[in-house]
Length: 104
Image 1 (tube, rainbow, N blue to C red):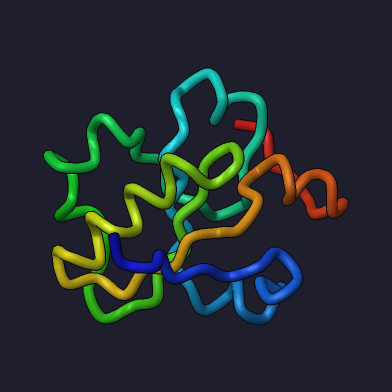
Image 2 (cartoon, helix red, strand yellow):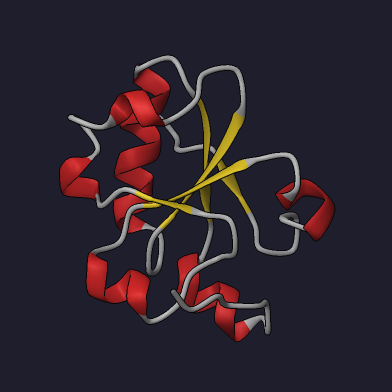
């Protein structure tokens, strides 16, 4: 299995966030409890049919709760020609680091 490209929460600064497409692949109830501001929500189970909503030619940061589902999404999207990295630690790590969480 190929290594999954990743970015750490520390590397995902506000400046970097301004230049990436954040894709949240968690389920609806998880999304509703809070997400990264500006993120696009496509649950992992819908990603294959909605892949056209993920831009080509732009860096994509994929996020889930801890990194497992977003890791699968990262592999799938990279195979589909996108430039995707997985957020190490997911939303649990994001919140633990004190980063802002947006509610719907």
